[in-house]
Length: 322
Image (tube, rainbow, N blue to C red; front, side, top):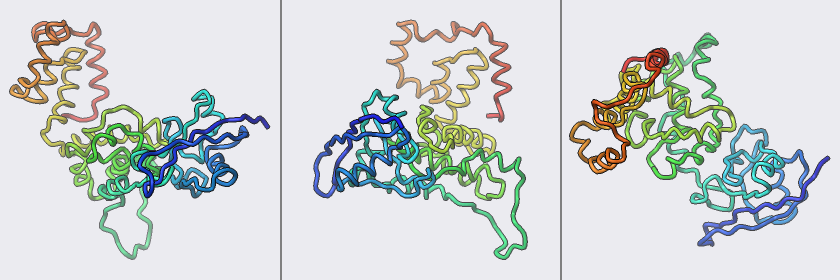
């Protein structure tokens, strides 16, 4: 079996005794079938028994071993070391999912993750017979609308890969939002509107997602959180829950200007979203854009050469009325 000698730079920190973290290097002869968890085990068992990390099932089901390797969010039990070495040209830096939440080496405090997860009530809410005589079944076609959102293992990989989570402590994060969709898409759940009202709130809900796709890239189970967040946006309008907010109006005008011009009317997006008075706070930026040819006058707004095709695409893609 093929082997390689690789050096791993590992994050070391003890919140009880250390002020700043350090990185310690370990060199091992690695087999081509080994995953990152094998390396962590070998470092602990063969070189440094003080190394701390979480692990459990080893089958990619429990999510305990979530970490980052050279900035890539992974489950240590799933990622092949050779593949990562090729991807990062042999520069392998092993860190916790969130260095600022580190408690001991690769172990982090996930309190914020779990508190937000609990906030969305991650369980079915329904009036049920406590002594049923048959199962509450739904058809495969109806179950398919959940789109594998129930595959989430709460590993937190998507959460700690999300840039919004790092700058906004109130944001629920992709895992909690994907879990919300798991139940808003379930016809057996009776709390759909209440769930949607929660995630419609500015500062914490779906409108604060920046569509960077990092959560989908990171998810080890293919849950596609960004896809679920997009579905939640649509459900807010379908159920008439979306509040008259800057974010909701931005979604409306974005679609309308694309359909009208085939391209975005930047000035109209700001005016419609924030109101005529709200435009005034952007006066300096608007003047700069205007003088640099970045902002046309209303009567000079360009239109796409293929406007008819764009309109057809918008109409086909629109699943609800704003």
